[in-house]
Amino acid sequence: MGFSILSSATARLRFPSCINVALIVLFAPIAATSLSAQWLKVTTPGVPRNADGSVNMSAPAPKLADGKPDFSAVWMTGEPNTRRGGGVLSSPKQAAGPTDAQAPNNSSTSNPSTSNPSTNDKPGDAEVITASRQMSNIGVDLPGGLPYQPWLVPIVKERTANDAVDDPHIRCLPDNFIRAYGLPHLLKFVHSPGLLLMLNEMNAGYRQVFTDARPLPKDPAPAWQGYSSGKWTGDTLEIDTIGLRDDTWIDWNGSVVTEQAKVREQIRRPDFGHLEIRVTVDDPKAYTKPWTVTLKQRIVVDAELIDEVCLENEHSLTHMK
Image (tube, rainbow, N blue to C red):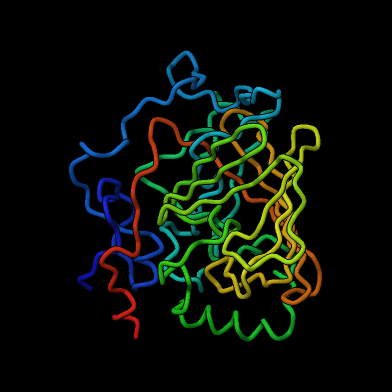
């Protein structure tokens, strides 16, 4: 198709060639080149390791100065999508594969010595970043699916049928944080008492979660990431977010949240290698009732974020017209 969507992310091999422009932008197939300018082989300090040198994913989570869990790390999805029959998703019309047989994010079941360890008992591979099971349909595990309001049903059906040609992600617009947890791009959390900063490798995006007890704004101007304030309940960080833009996509099928959405995340780090993010969406404009999903993350070590710029020399929209 003869177009370039990335800046200096050419050092990281992601996926083989895909069938359409939408998939190319989502998964960013890249040819490997010189690694001299990239932070791909840096040693992450403070990583607990087993006797054989492998990462001890079930070691205790690190702590902040105030004693709360420290979420600081580079992360990717903890539930990579593996379709029945193999391969990766090539269309939003395809169904996700089964859940991992061994539950991640639970240190009591994460044992590196088992004969058939879960994928999630190993760090994520920065050179093979996969999408999550929920990337295409975030409600894939909900009985009956997402509880859409009647007006949204035909819109999602159309977006799925046309391979999400109007997807804001494909058009290089910022990814909402709910969706970012499942896309095949690295996230980096920088955590301190009072602030959790979430950095998205894709287009150098960021999100700020304030944990200094500030109230949410009463009449916020709609924003891509909304406005987020968090508080601790034990070792779980509860984040409330409002002020999202209308028609903000949260999966590849075209499911959305609207300006009426209230989103609560409950984030916990049960051990060194995993995050568990329980997301509840209360959006009466788009859904008939609140719904909750759990989006799991696993750590990536010995690598850092690199430039992954979709907008630079972007020609996708020309081909999509």
